[in-house]
Length: 81
Image (cartoon, rainbow, N blue to C red; front, side, top):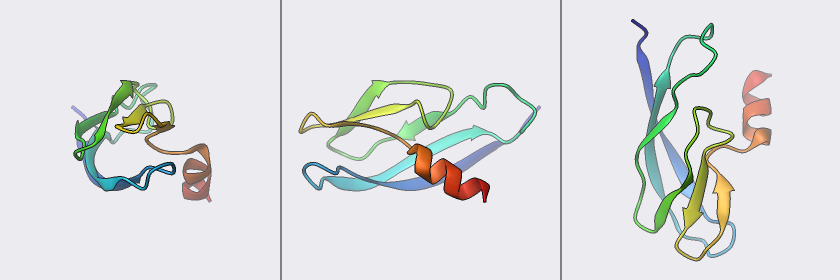
């Protein structure tokens, strides 16, 4: 059985400036096709627009209406370096 990585990420809405910390987790096994990504807690003012097994496809919606990915493609690329 794989272990779940747990981490916090600061969310910041680029439109209204709403911010807070989200708690998330995913399975720590690079061989898995789907890491089973899940946001366990969102700060006040944020909600799930579209859930996904991958951070880059998991969409967050701010109370102002702005939608954005949990983790941008640029963040993912920077981590792979």
